[in-house]
Length: 419
Image (cartoon, rainbow, N blue to C red; front, side):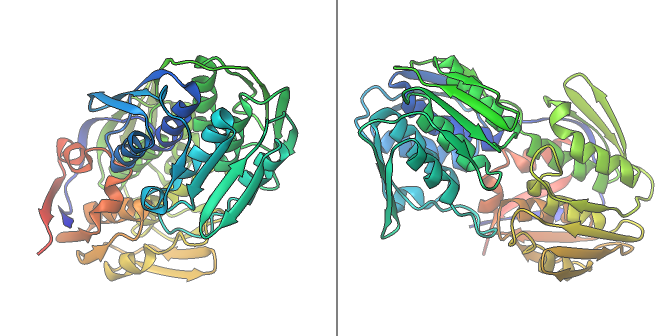
């Protein structure tokens, strides 16, 4: 086990390059199963979730080659089916995308109930509803989800709640179904669009991604292709918040500013100077910031994945801030750790009230999940003294070369083995 040690009070300055989008990568890798051919995926983030999925695909019969640290060649030609055991699936949530991909190609799949960060209830009932609408029989026994169909037939599917996972899984299952599938109340996140572009690159016919109605005309066969993953909007947002928290002047490179409009608007509201320039954003923060209210929403609203990092920034802003978490009920586990650093936060249900304090002080804290870990890194950059962050493995799930990128901006960060 390792820990991060951050000495606060260093202003961030310089340029940081954003990696490929974690949430997109962990969906596209399972989708290569549909090709039955060779796919080359580049701009993959070099993170543990990607490495785990690559190993899982290899165990399932795919030929996986690392062309460089951010590029994988995946040949799923020899795969004959998909059964992902609990030991294989427990490490990450995205293992459930193997259900849709394998059902689409083989008309059957078995995947253990997925793992991932404990941030609240994440049911898969909408996934199952979609598979069943396409003609599959789905059973859940002893933690194993099984889906099987003689054939899949296109259908009109209305999602009761907007779900990124269900939208993607239904897309994967539907691309080789007979006829046309229409997904209504579909999620609109950028990685839905990236997935549609990847599927179309393989020969699928998907239209409407990025809107709440996606139409999929089934095709008989898909093939291999080359695809580049879009930049990670959550990593970009995290560095935007970090620059604001550390009173910095930072250029965040390789981004799609359109994807960052919600966080840009909130930082400007606090008094941060945000300037867009093509595929980069400059953050300048030197004056006292004012507190604001945020409410997490599905895209294009404020992302739940940035709520925890943003909460850290609000702890020292002037006045009172209110954070409403509408997506995951377990997304306030970082609050107790921030309180240990001197934050004044009260949580009632899904609402956190944050009274700004003059400053945070260092402490030994522990990450409970990926984005909680990011929030503690930001708090450490703000705090007086040396903050030690334990359970760094959560941070490694979603941030490529975190300490190297922060050091490149002038932060005082080091990684050590826990004693």
